[in-house]
Image 1 (cartoon, rainbow, N blue to C red):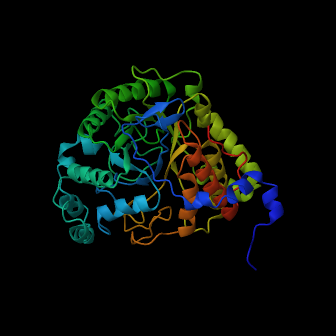
Image 2: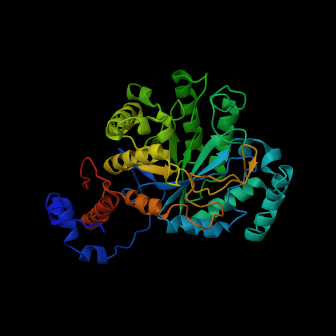
Image 3: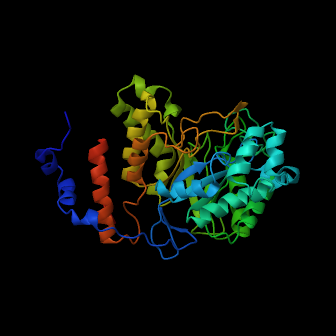
Length: 435
């Protein structure tokens, strides 16, 4: 039997009723104004040069594995992929890169063809030759720039994320890439690499931010060195490219920023600092399956707020730069976690980046063509893995509140969100008002 919404349900939810009885709002489409770049911060909000709130609704595009080439270019033309990012409603890509791309000249100068040949990925070379012939004989750093340019040509903002030092899959406590002083993590080389990348992309308008390092971790991690080196890295990036947002990650795989509560980051510049955090369902093991989902959600959210969410209350932007789930839809733990995540993300209206765009990898952990079940694309990079998830995430892509949102836009966004709340049974704990 089909499902329908009863009148009694609507009358008990006056906001939903108010928004639904004015159908003209859904008919009139307000064109999206061009974002005035560069971006800066205003309290907890990221804003454009006109002071309007810009919500980062990003997807992660991986480019830090052994080939050091953005994934999927053997399957589809990069311009098509950039256009699909826009079609799926994202305004931003968090593009990952390994430190050695900027600091190891012998690596950066390898051509795409040579990089794949060294790894025995001959079939992938043929795919790139067919789909992206213009990059196959470019040096790796130039191919990386070409991807950024393609995204820019399609009005997609880019966050450059230094994901790891030595190209490869991330992350573990013992991979030598985790914290300052580890085998592959020389702090001086890291600052040199950040400076070089900031310089290369100085003046590239769609590069709006740089994430200094992904998921700090491992036995050497400590708060004292975090402040020392993250502040040095932030200053180096800002000196080389003062227009980009400077994004700082926390400890313990980017889950813990609690130490910032009582000791502020000390920088010479203002209006550019953003913090980032990660939140996955597997962080809490099988708690979502084993426990009462509502109780688990409450407990986990309390912990997230204690470790990183408090920054919003202190007036800092928080960019949840990784979250995601198995999009095949049969993982109960992930499905329950997503219900919780979506409710909190709507209520707090934070900036975010989904893991991941990737449908399959050239080479991951020794496996050629590994299927990425967290990926929006299916293995072939053509079909969408889970169209209902894509529709659901669209409810989070527009801002609910922030600076200088027009009343019309607020009402339109609230109505669209309300309809999705009903359709997907995403019941928010508080209404999201524009202010």
